[in-house]
Length: 321
Figure 1: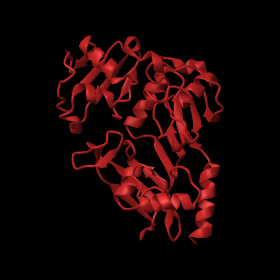
Figure 2: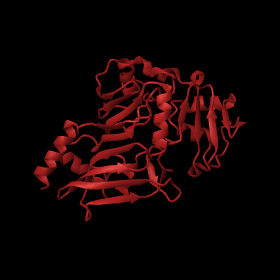
Figure 3: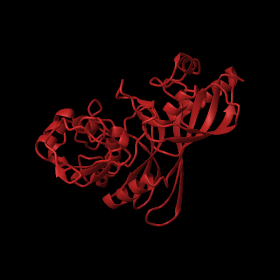
């Protein structure tokens, strides 16, 4: 998803990046996680509700030049009825809450928000049951301002109102929200800490994956080794940028894939996950730190490592001393 995706009431503004050059307009919009099917996107374009740099565009086959500003208007009337979200009684763990913000511990195997193929039982369905006021700007993304992959557990921030969402989105855009993950990766490191600085773009072969690419967006990931085993390493990871699948792509590229990663792992890392009794990739969003956009207080939120990952660590200590 494009980091410049800023939902605003009944319309969305998207800033294209240079590496979006050459993409068809409808394909580009489909990548932005708006919740619209390809058919609805094409209807949105045909109806004149897509504005590019202030000019109405009616051609779905328009080829992106990169750096354009798109406005998608009238989103509510074009949103897919079958994935309109609704409250569901699902147990969730609230780890922080104030007048403006909720922080939730997302369990593994839960999708963050409804989309084709995952229309219910999502984190958003659960949060709406907990607090229905979060359903403002219905049919876009409500108060959710970032996401985690389905099999990644950990902290998700949710805004309680539109202004809070806009301010949190700005903090993310300005890289003023620090996130720390705990990861178990294949192999060992000579150094106890490091920085991975490698550009990433969406894969041309598989649109569900990301690739290292010279024309991609600059991406940086800091890490330090918390504990070293003979076959794997437990890391504290701090992504300095927020690209899709960034941590997983970076560590796979340098030969240390996340244990259990089905998309970016290799045969050895997948086999090791089985040995450790793990049924998902070992990645947990453990900490988030930021300055509160209204109170000015420093907010530090932590989420303990889930039981399945703790058992994985214990197994690594026993088997790979």
